Image (cartoon, rainbow, N blue to C red; front, side):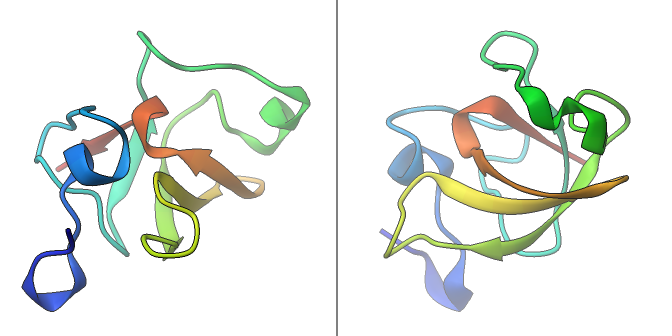
Length: 86
């Protein structure tokens, strides 16, 4: 369930997955989780490097999915594949 202010616990969105902060929300900086990451042809958009910023969440329509702006493009990502960074 979303928390007050629109935050959603990662466990609610990703079937028990945890991030460093326990929540991933709009504006958070994220990096790939090396234990769950699945590469794709969109790696050229910088998905595998540095980090990205969550620019859209879909907690009700697409649970467990967020849009992340990576260095060279934007992709939909499964929360279970991400780790929040400070």
